[in-house]
Image (cartoon, rainbow, N blue to C red):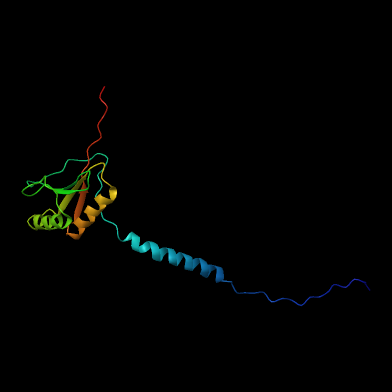
Length: 148
């Protein structure tokens, strides 16, 4: 007989459950992140950005509606009695609505000064969307080439 006898341990039953607590924590964090970011994604303004090789605006017999923003952040519209006179926000919205009622093309172009704050341009684009404008375009100038 051998002096060494192996100690017999009772067989453990294998655990067939998965601990899901860490997964629930991760899921809740993701849920909170998506709840915060989802409303931010739906509040954007659709903009038709110009391509690298931009074409000139086709007028189709009518003068395009252009809303301009100068360095001081004042608004102007090219349609009306005095296009050089700055307009208040509400007057601008009213005038754009009136002009677009008589046109089949529902596009308005925004021409902002280089020095004007980006937020001011976005503010004008949002006002135009609220006024019922379907398409908002940005007016740019082609880059000048160095001539030698």
